[in-house]
Length: 155
Image (cartoon, rainbow, N blue to C red; front, side, top):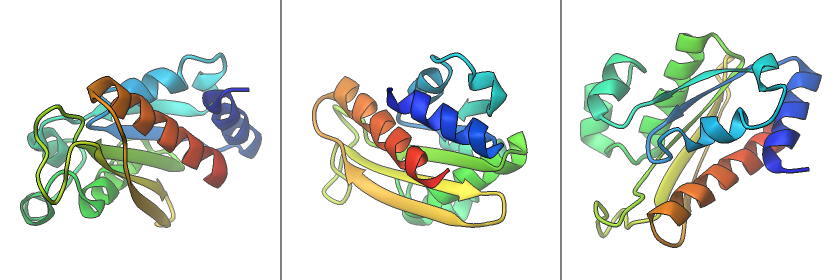
């Protein structure tokens, strides 16, 4: 059974819903979630918020948080996930933001740096960072797999 099937079964069995807020994965996470039958029973939808402007207007990420910490940060992914829980009215939301490359990296946040956060509507938050190896396509794929694996453990 693949990761998206495990997530689907866990969420359906527990009667909980999920939404996503994606930046660096550009919709790849949502695509994986809906690639298996039954996704409509628990997956409400997603927002691809690539521009900071969308993170602010649609997901409610405060401008000062973006300015202070940058889009690839714990603080921003937590705000993105909290915003998605509100927009979609789901039990859980997961957000992911990172530097997919090949450019855009810095000394503090090299290419492959990714932050993710899973938020429950009651306010519980799990956030983590990881380094995804490889080129842009590999970073996106690795990030989606990492998030799916984490979702399969918390649902």
